[in-house]
Amino acid sequence: MLHQNQELDLFKTYYLLIMYMFSPYRLFTKGVSKVASLFKKGGNNPKKLLAKGSLDLHDTIKNSYNPNENFGKEHGYEVDKELSNHNQQILYNKKTGHMVMSVTGTHNLDDVKTDAALMSGKLKSTDRFKEAEMTLNKAKQKYNPTSTTGVGHSLGGSVISKLDLDKKVTLDKGAEIGASTGKSEVALRSSGDLVSIFGAGNKHMTTIHKGGFNILRPSTWLKAHDVSNIKDSKFKVPV
Image (cartoon, rainbow, N blue to C red; front, side, top):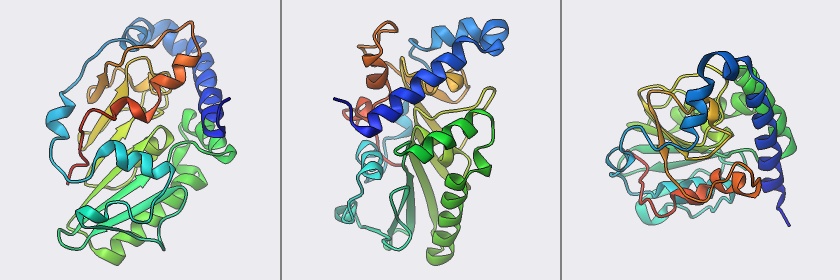
């Protein structure tokens, strides 16, 4: 039996697949290359880009879905309980002055509406984005950090990619047709992930090969979009 978050992800994946299959963008411009990029490993070596840092990237993203108020404490980070909620978390290291913001992916019905706005290029007009931007601004005013890093998965990655942060790490982020990936962002996607299909061919996107994806088996679509695909990668949240 699927959990609510998995049901939402599956619904979103079906929606994006239909959008992709019938999009003029696919049919007349970059369709062939996009299909190939679903399964192709490519991009910069993420191990070099994400080798330094104390917080584990997988654990930090997973914590955004199931927040733990003690997360990061062993590495000198404190969770700001006032600025953190079920949509985003703020972590600050007093010793280094480094601040981390993690943004949760789709996890409720309201987020499905945000996903629809994202696909039409209107993410910045949504309450979800505005809340994240306001939280980030409050955190900057409160801590005056020496450096900031944002991490996010799926919709969370989409939000992070548009915020004013020094460094960004996104995983399987949803993107509208024609969207680009900035130089300050380390954008990762799992091979076979359909949610991130429109960003698959971007210059700064890195596709990580993960076996088990089958276009004819919908159950594997969720697997390709799962955060656990980077669990053994040893990637770090860059400072």
